Picture 1: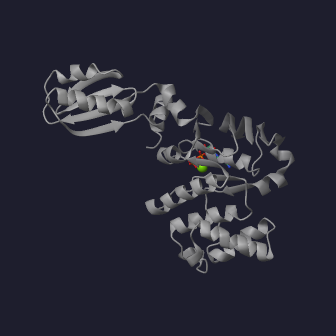
Picture 2 (picture 1 turned 45 degrees about the horizontal axis):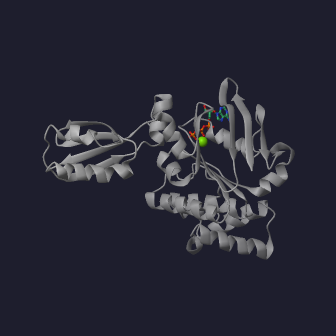
Picture 3 (picture 1 turned 60 degrees about the vertical axis):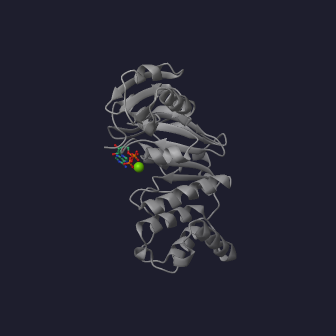
Length: 309
Ligand SMILES: Nc1ncnc2c1ncn2[C@@H]1O[C@H](COP(=O)(O)OP(=O)(O)OP(=O)(O)O)[C@@H](O)[C@H]1O
Ligand SMILES: [Mg+2]
């Protein structure tokens, strides 16, 4: 559906986007994960036809987007990182404005505003001025503005920054709902948890480059990091770590205070074996804590730095 090939954008000496390629397929929730300044927004701006690349190509359904800007804009919905709303107008007036930009008018516009305000759950507050809205409500309206013309692809640039957890969850669930309705999503974030929750495909971006891409499992597999399982016991005898190491799939086990710290390949199948082994040795488990390797670990592994400070 969307193909980005060897994309570059420099601002003077800054290589904001430095040779980026990726492909988004119909139905994907595609995540672009990276820290501040990685080049996410610059990439998004080029895909949205708002910024011309220094070089490279972006194809939408096989055709260059820069040769077909008007039709591409009709098919894309873009939720910008900076909220693009008129604070002194009401929510309704803002949606009416954005709908008219996309050529909607009359009853069609009215119907779409109703449908969209259902999706973003702002129907009760549309008459209020936007400067009376909470941060989360503004973010939701910002998303609504991008949905009025029924885009087939929705591009969201960090849509949950600076809002409360409840609004954030609402937005994440809206993203999944829209995807279920057939809308392809590009979602940028520097929150690893959001991308893990939403995305079937992920590109990790840093300093203008894609440093890793694939499904989440593929990315985690790439760094070959194992799951850590902390087993806290009622009492620890010195032999238990040796016994636990006998379990197939456990690569190491060591004792730390009242806890055995294990590393292994697949926590799901190991837990039953661990419980059995512990009870066979006359002990019982007080708690178990499983730490699966995640995208944060992938980022740390590849760049030597944390995704967030
Ligand atoms: N219009 C511009 N002029 C000059 N430099 C720019 C411009 N836009 C972006 N940059 C620079 O390009 C780099 C990438 O910025 P970009 O906004 O794309 O990053 P980002 O991944 O979206 O970061 P954030 O998470 O902070 O939004 C940064 O070093 C930024 O300072
Ligand atoms: Mg940005």
